[in-house]
Image (cartoon, rainbow, N blue to C red; front, top):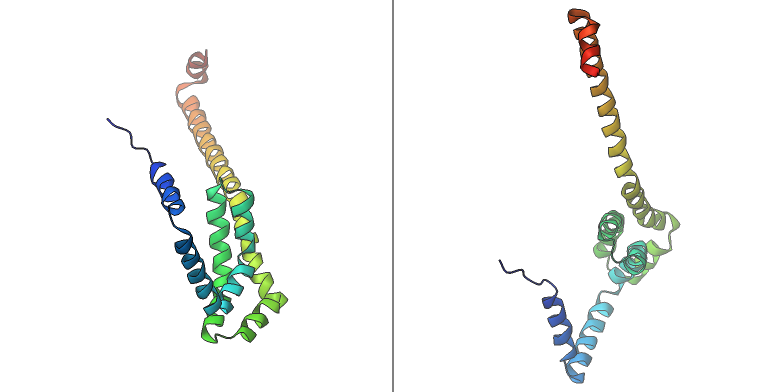
Length: 161
């Protein structure tokens, strides 16, 4: 069997970007700037609201699980206010949303909830597994005690040796 190398498309993508001429890069930059300026209220709310996600993307890029969980929670918190900006698409409304401390608490606090979920859900599963194992052990001990009553403890003691 031949193993496929998954890193080649990324290398090819980097090579294809470096093959762009200066004029093509400038055109790409101007196009992106036009998109950012034409959607400035939404971009402003997204940039401010998704700061925790960008921070994790920069500081811990290899931990994709953390990025996905915190990013999803963060995007859920920002989405509420993004819809408000899209409904009335003005810079005044975007500045009002970003300037209100309670809106920022909800946007950034949702990322905090994602971080709590990332760190505590594994502990919750460990706790549930231990509780299940202890319950099963008690059930087995009760069955063993019942067998000891029926057959006598001498037979069970001989099995333990």
